[in-house]
Length: 146
Image (cartoon, rainbow, N blue to C red):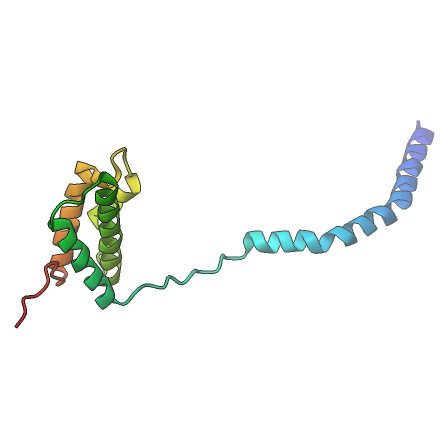
């Protein structure tokens, strides 16, 4: 029995000695790529710096779109949807610029829905968000000429 173990040990040692150079060479060739993959996976992603328009420009756009929305209705459904979607985007940008933490419109926009910008629930969220913006000190209607 002891003879079998020594033969088995000898075969294992022979295999280690015979294949170790090839395994080491393979590891050396693959190591740089493995380190690069691990580095990309574990390093923190670079923070994308959002460039936002100045608050004055956002307010000007918000007032313009608010006046268009309250004016005569758009001629087609596509124009009405585009106007409301643009208004929602600018309204949310103003909320971010002013510091309104969680405007009601954001949840409605993220949820989407089948009607999109024309959804009645989104219209209510839009109204509540407009109230929050006005509470923050931004009037949606253009100031009267002095």
